[in-house]
Amino acid sequence: MSQLTANQREKLIADLRLVVSDAESLLKLTAEEIGESAIGLRNRLQERLSEAKTNVVDMQASARERAARATRATDEYAHEHPWQSMAVGAVIGVLIGALLTRGLDDLD
Image (tube, rainbow, N blue to C red; front, side, top):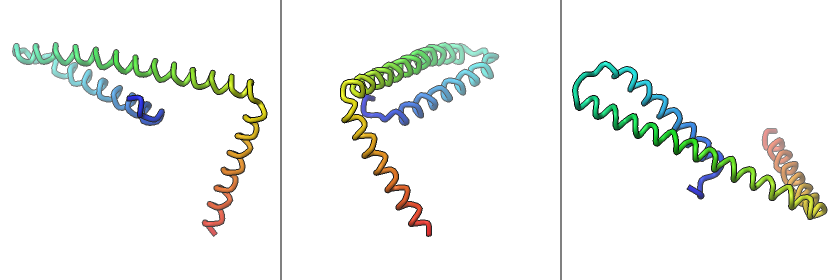
């Protein structure tokens, strides 16, 4: 999981929430099924849904904590090395400007 990008993690969390929501809706629709196998299946599905919800919440908390740590580390670095931080920002700005200019030239 650590190999996933932030966007991939957010998409995975959103997809898991959607699956959980759909499964809960399915459980509500089949609540009137009476057979013992249906009851056992519903109970197992409810347990798994509960586990999935817990996992999604844990993943979100973990992602938030990592983002907060990265933000703090970046802030500390910028305060400890202001000139290097400004140089990196300037280089990134020049690169973005060059890419945008190049992209606009390609449109002509």
